[in-house]
Image (tube, rainbow, N blue to C red; front, side, top):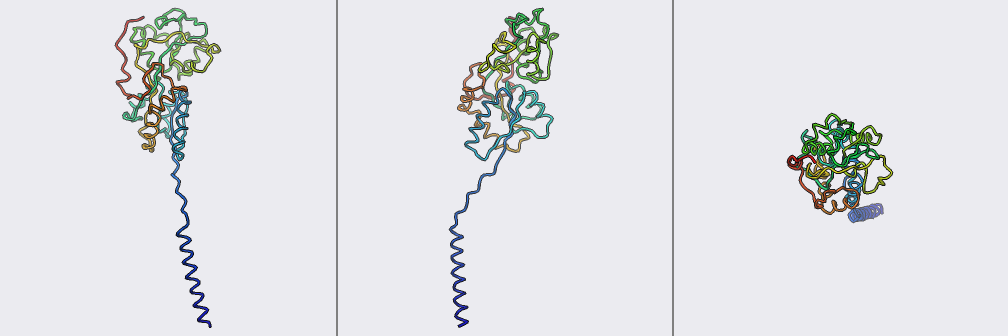
Amino acid sequence: MKAAVIIVLAILVVIGGALAWRAQGTHPVAPTAEPEETLYLAVPMGVFVPVSQVMDKFTAQHPNVKFSTMVDTPEIMAQAVEENEKKPDIFISPGGHEATVLREKGFIDPDSMVGFGSYEVVILTPKGNPGKIEEPADLTNPEVKVISFSPPDLTAASHAARQALQNMGLWETLEPKIKVTGCCNESFQWVVDGRAEANVQFLGCPMDTKSVDLSKTKAEIACLFPRDTYYIPRTVAGILTTTEKRELAEEFLSFMTSPEMIEFMASTKLRNDQDLPLAPGPWGPAQEVGPAKVASR
C-alpha cells in the first residue's frame, strides 16, 4: 500500500512539473524598452521656440529620447562651452560666427556644421532717432556719440556689422564711438536706456518684428545695412567634439535641418530674411568671407 501511494505521488509530481514547465514556456515575455537617452542642446533665445517644436516632433518619433537645453545669449553659451565641464552635444548659433569661433578653438567638429535660415543686420536707435540715422553713413553724424556693440570677435551680428562698416570704409572713423558690451542683450539695453544713439543687431532680435508691437518699444529700427556689404549670416548648428552621443546627435541634426523641418521652423519664428531656399547648406570659412570692399554710401 505504501509503495502504491509513493508511486502515485511521484506521478503527480512529474505531471505537476510538466504543467509548470509548459505554463512557463508559454508565458508572454514583456518587450524590453529602449534605454532612455538625453541629448543636451545649447539653443539661443532667439530660435528656442522653433527648435523646441522640432524637439517635440523628434521625441514623438523617438519616445526614449529626452532633451535638456542651455538657453541664453550666444555669447554666454559660447563662454559656457569653453568654461563648463559639462558641455552640450549640439551648439546652435544665430548668425554662425559664435559656432565658427568654437570650431576654431576645437570645440565643434567642422564636418558637422550646417547652416539654415538667414539674417539681415540693422541699426537700432532710441525712440525718436536722436542721431538722425537714415543710412549707415549717418553713424558719423555728430549727434551720434555712442554706438553699442556686443563683442564683434564673437557675436555674429556685430561681426557682420563690423565687416559691413569696414567694407564701406567707415569702421576706422567710427571706432572711437563704439562701446563694446558683454552680450547682445546688454548692447541693446544701451539704446533702450538712451546711453547710446545706435546699436547693431539682427533684424528681429531682440525686437521680434514677427510678433512684437514695435510701437510699444523704447527703440526703433533706423535702417538696414546693405546686403552686399557683409557675409550672409545663417543659423548654424554643429556637434561638439566632446559629445558621447555622436550617433544620436547626428540623427537629430539631420532631422532638424531637413528641408521639411526648416520649412516648418520658418513658418513660426525662424528668420529667413534674405529669402534663401529652405534647405540646409554647408558652413565654414568660405561662408564667412565677406564681399569685396564697396564704396561708402
